[in-house]
Amino acid sequence: MGKLPKSFYEGDTLEVAKGLLGKVLVHRNEGVELKGKIVEVEAYIGAIDKAAHSYNNRRTERTEVMFWSGGYVYVYLIYGMYYCMNVVTGREGEGAAVLLRGLEPVQGIEQMSINRYGKPLETLKRSQIINLTNGPGKLCRAMGITKNNYGEPLTGDRIFIENINLKEEFDIGVSKRINIDYAEEARDFEWRFFIKGNPYVSKG
DNA sequence: TCGGAGATGGTC
DNA sequence: ACCATCTCCGAA
Image 1 (tube, rainbow, N blue to C red):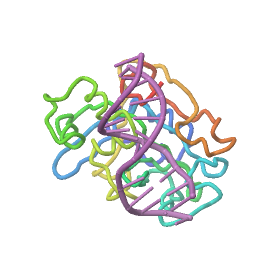
Image 2: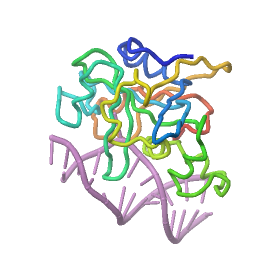
Image 3: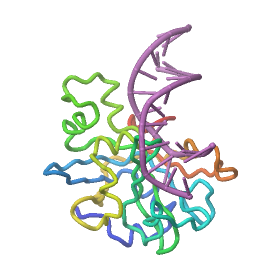
Image 4: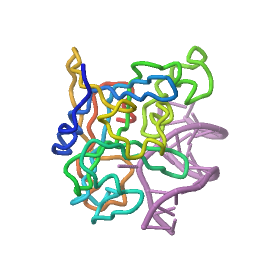
């Protein structure tokens, strides 16, 4: 069970987005290994997408990594408080990425509880357990993902995605993306993908 | 359980 | 000024 290869990330962004569902994100940080199954994603494709940070070839210090070839980590700060993690996709110069919006804890859930709430798992209510990783800001907090991960390769040993095939089948849900009402026609693009029925999907 | 309002700071 | 979000608090 190896990690997804660089060639996977360099493929078509919408295919990569769907292909990431059910795979397991691994972060090795400060001696702990945290794992979460990807259950919800959104695609952003700079060339045609007014919601993408890379739209109109906007290449800045923040968006620089989006223009690299697929297989790197793009982390940004949102609302001054929360980090969001993307996987860079496609060819060099393309400016595309997939946002991770929901994870199901697989390993290290006790540490995730500490990271999110500062208290042990056994003290959490049911609703708090679902809230560990069912949103882009929440999952970064739980997994210990910060700006320090910006630009890291997904082909290394510190952060990567396992190339596993789950035994159980799942249906893929499709919808418009969340909180991009400013993006004119792009707001209607159905580029959000999720595992139907999974409780760690952020909404819907 | 649900919805509205406020927090909060990097980026452009 | 804007923003790919979250938490809190009050109403039901």
